[in-house]
Length: 264
Ligand code: SAM
Image (cartoon, rainbow, N blue to C red):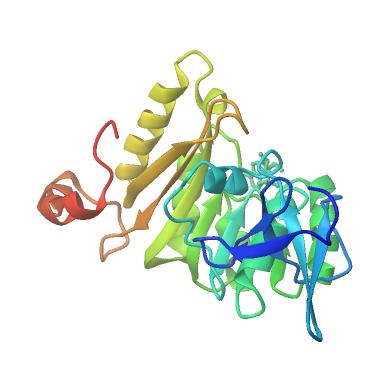
């Protein structure tokens, strides 16, 4: 997208996300840290009377959440005021847009175990008061239990074979009952021999055994090859254990309304 002067911004149907309308359309978020870019992304300022608003272009080739939006996902659940836990924060590229999205009333707990990426993440957090960087292994949520409150949304992009289990461990500790999850699945991280669609379906089935009710999935072509994003709701049983087969059967009628059908 070229030049600020001819660009106008419209609200996207996902609250907190904007569309920059110019020569080409682009996704954007309102910059929580005006005057600064995080990863070299373009900033555009719009003046309306006395008010100046700065937006940051959000590139779907750099962010799986942006790719999911452009691919038409129904709901990302992350919105102004959300409390979000983000697993696999890396240097904070997508985290920074989530920080814009949740705004000053929201919070982003950003978990990353690589110390190298963690340094960049900490620098992002220094400029954004709603980002709490946590440089720990997401397989050990007890290590950051004291730093975090309960969250509305749990996002995972750890690209690990046991990522469903990592999601569950963190959901048990931090995701409120009825909260939502968003997980990015990179097929060849889980099984490099099976077709991507089969891997996505197997992961969805795994999530269903873990108190997660997947609602939707989108594939991320052409932005990311053999990647999908799955979203859904978290409904742990009252004793905190995974739903048993019989209780899952009991819930079947209710779930029919809200859970993604097999093979959808
Ligand atoms: N979500 C990032 C973005 O859009 O900017 C990219 C994430 S990258 C695909 C995966 C990240 O997960 C890597 O930075 C990796 O170090 C991190 N990671 C992998 N396993 C992890 C674990 N067990 N705990 C915390 N971070 C982990």
